[in-house]
Length: 233
View 1 (tube, helix red, strand yellow):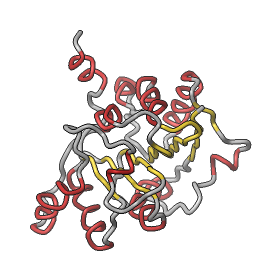
View 2 (cartoon, helix red, strand yellow; view 1 turned 45 degrees about the horizontal axis):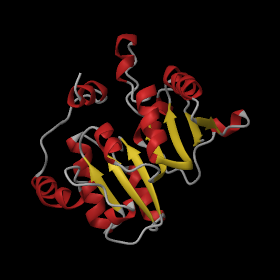
View 3 (spheres, helix red, strand yellow; view 1 turned 180 degrees about the horizontal axis):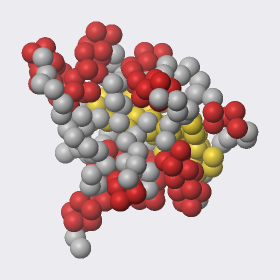
């Protein structure tokens, strides 16, 4: 199997549909003009240090995979201007919504990628990221689809490579089977230490947590969420 075949098998189908309802005219304009200016270009070598991706000077780098409506990403970028944020989201409508917020708030510490996150992870330099956020990812609840869950030994190895020693992987979900899946996979991998010391540590949202639409939906439907933090060994 050649390199391209291995990459194809390792990066398949972690996300579902790519587009919902038609975009409004202004959204189309942002997708055509603002997104290209903010998109991480994987056809060129990654800058070293990776902080060179950003127009404004930044001291830390944080990666959010699957930012959905973008509430969390915009909140974090607004409260932490000295941190550079890379947001990944292949769903077109979500990307269009985020671009409107970036434009309105004039955020200079966000870069974006609108395709498979594994491609970006493979492009990033070793030990270049301070934190990875995977918040309410698609749980792929049917057992036959579990292979599509983003948390896997292959992807944890990707996380381990790009995270700085002592960097964090933060995971949130309201699906018990995916929470247990993530705990088991991180334990099996061996490169991550779960930081919880008691139950309140994983039942309590992350500091300055803004909430997300997925969390709100879970609460309406009577499901509680888990907030897991792992430290890269």
